[in-house]
Image (cartoon, rainbow, N blue to C red; front, side, top):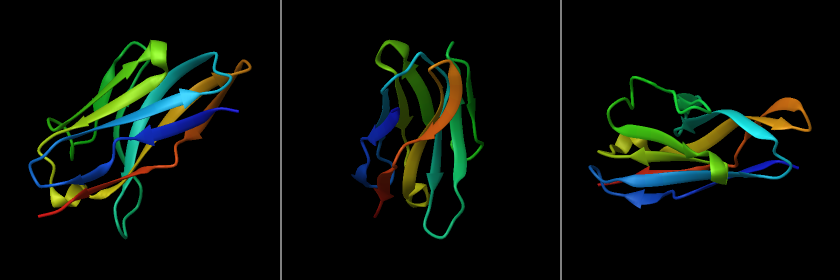
Length: 119
C-alpha cells in the first residue's frame, strides 16, 4: 500500500516562509512526476508545481519566483519551499505523485497539510 504523507504546514505571518515535505512510502519501484496542489477556502484545487525524476520543474504563474519545488529521490520525498507568503496563499496543500507500484504506474494523493497566512 503506497502512501503520501505531507508535513510542515502551519501558521505564518505575511512575508514569512514555510517548507512543506511529502514522503512516499510502501511498495514503490520508482516515482515519476511529483506535484504540489492547493485548495483555498471556497476554491477549486489549484496546480502549483511539478518536478520530474530528473528535477525538471514547472510552476503556476501564481507562485513562480516565490515557491521552489525540489525532491530527494533516495528518500522518495518532495519539498515545497514557500517564501514571501501572502494571505491568499492560505489553503490546504496536497502532494500528488505518479508512482510505479508492482510495475503499474498509479497516481496518488496525500491527505493535505494546512497553511494559514494571517496578519
